[in-house]
Image (cartoon, rainbow, N blue to C red; front, side, top):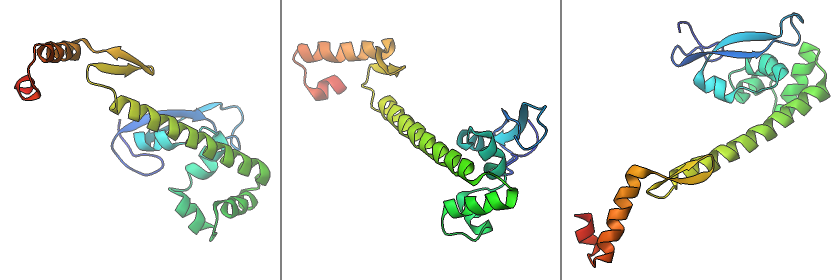
Length: 158
């Protein structure tokens, strides 16, 4: 795919990302395709209003804070709402909900990454369940057999 990410302007790892159309634009359009890099797709909010009004306009929270000369994210969101004539309570509620969802998703990703990393040799985590890996299970079986024959660790390793 040619072109650049619509958010960070990177030209590698691009994908066509389908999102809900901007709710403040043409109401007849329900979905839009946006070219984004994989990193931007992974970090994109699911809420259409937050996606178009904040995520696609600002490269980071820091940029949002600097643009509105604010100390806190909530203050910057208030200024954004005034500028764009948005419902302040609704935008802040959605932003908080997105932060909670992101925190939960990150916790799940970390737990899954740990389980995948920490899976014992000879096993693999599939959908959260340990399953035997046949090719590694043969090696484990051989190690146990040699141990039961009375061989030590050095001999088994050889």
